[in-house]
Amino acid sequence: MDTLVQQFAVANLRRRPEVVETGGFVIGFDPGTASPYINYATPRPGTAPGAAEVAALVAAFRERGLKPRLEFAPDTAPAVAPALLAAGFTVEETHEYLVCTPQTLAAPAVGGPLVETPGTDEEFTAIDAALAEAFSGEFASSSEGADRLRRTQNGGGAVRFVRSPDGGCAGGACCSAPAVGTAELAGVGTRPQYRRQGIAGAVTAALARTMFEQGAESVWLEYSGEGSRRVYESVGFQPKGTRLYISLEG
Image (cartoon, rainbow, N blue to C red; front, side, top):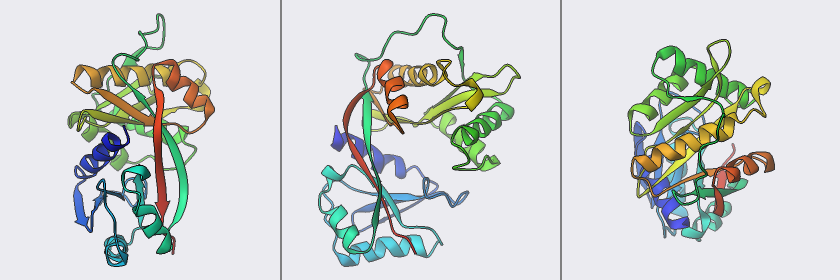
């Protein structure tokens, strides 16, 4: 599964508004944000960079005023992490990823939260704001964030949410358009006052089901803690491998 996930990472970054390919790396840039979680690179499977290739990678970020950063499945390109560490990169985190298939996806829960598909500017804005709140200010809500959600929805991916009693968003998530037979589900978040009501599991299951209906053979995601892991496992996601986050400060 590692190779499939890494092939997906390459294909997904190539969808960014600006793409740079250098020395076996694919870098995806979005001029609408300076976020390192959106502007980052990944190696093609099997890449074995030398010092010159790493320097060119770093230069592509520096000339845009961005932090050099990569996300990838390390076992698919074993020479990459040592080369980056030798150049001064430091490991941010190693994340385990979970995978769901049509065979493991749980049946819809009876009486669970109603999951909806956004269609209006107000709904995309509400989802972006709810996710910003859910992730404790890790990123600020913005018109660009709402636009990215709409592009995901309109570009073959999916966005789903549960409406709050005030008509806004209690929680939601998105899933990229499938590539190489799989899709990445990300940004699962619930506003604090609506947690422990089954919202995260409901939107996760609904997104996975939508991707399978569109022909994906699997959906994968990363989790942020044991609580979220239990939620994802309850709807059919199972551990399959790890991904490395690594960046260069200064």
